[in-house]
Length: 561
Image (cartoon, rainbow, N blue to C red; front, side, top):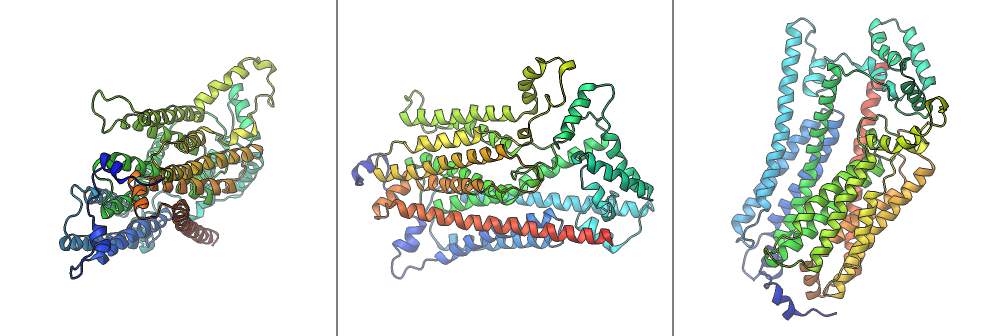
């Protein structure tokens, strides 16, 4: 119940002074300190990574002309942040030997510069292609075309898919049912432009099932009947391969750019640790484990909330019907992350132990949880594999001869439209339940673990409720369905990750020393920070949606004109 300082010093050296103590706690009269410079550093870097960067990503998604402004704003804030940090370090003694915060920050900035270099390289390639098209006589110089293609990177200049073909190219023919197909065929017959007819012609040929393969015909009919993407065979042309490579490249680039936001979060966490003087000596391994794992759950919660708001709906991840089927499901990605998390943590729990040291109870606990993540992630990925699903269903179809199979009998149930994979929720819920019973030296530490363990378990409960209601009524629209259970699940997941970070041994002992060992205070601070982050996420997603709605409206206006 009470802190035993003698016992603490048996395992940990006394906490040395830090930037926080000399700036704000033990500042001596007459000594000039400059905490304001550190505050400006945090402000400028925050504006760069959590303001200019995500806004620029949203502007890039619609190829907006102001995207370049946000790039300059990002690097401008970075320069100001680095300048104030350098000045603070020059005027303040070094209070944290061996700090890696600055080195990591420069590596992240180098990565950002590489991404910007790809932008410049793409601009040069577009400029060369545009000049070559003019020299060959295929185009004449036009300021609007130069601006759209070279500056903004829009593909309508040389790809032949201008605004007038927007309604024909954007809508994938593989998502049409019989009634929609007939309407499209009528529209094509009424067109006078031969180029339009050539663009829509593949829609008619791709929907004709092979007469030589009754199984493919039957599968195609079932897919159309249940409003799914038909699984007809098609040849892979060079254009298809280039399109796939281009799509993969864009996906990798988008993922790399968005990872900078999470890198900024890690810099915030490590910066707070360095300024307050934490994670030194024997505290380092436990401190890093809590901060890294808690930050993962925090980011996982924010991404889940973004899915609830409608992000990734083009991939079918917003609890909606996927417009296209060539992307992996969100549950597959979750299972993959859980697998990587587990397979890495399995070997990291012995960090700090000497060869031959016996396994402690805590090490066995943590290794067991990591192994659960490892193999449960594998099971989750296996369930999401289309090939494995076909293998699992082969027993029922093989038992009935082809001559006796009816179209209705072999048709997939409506629940096959979505994915209902409980394993990501299972491993997080079990982790939360286990951590609620984690042994700690002090009652206050146990209470904090109970808080975030309960939050993670609550995420699992609400995720399972999401699956229950969506199982009863699978999504039919490509619009985000926004199940309210996911709003709650994402909140408990993010807040649980934050409380996970708050439960480090060093922080809880510091709270007990200062008389702040109050569970309600820790919970309220975590809830407040989570709500603030959710408000930030809502603003970004809404801003991106506003940009897309206005961009599409402008394109449709020019198309109708």
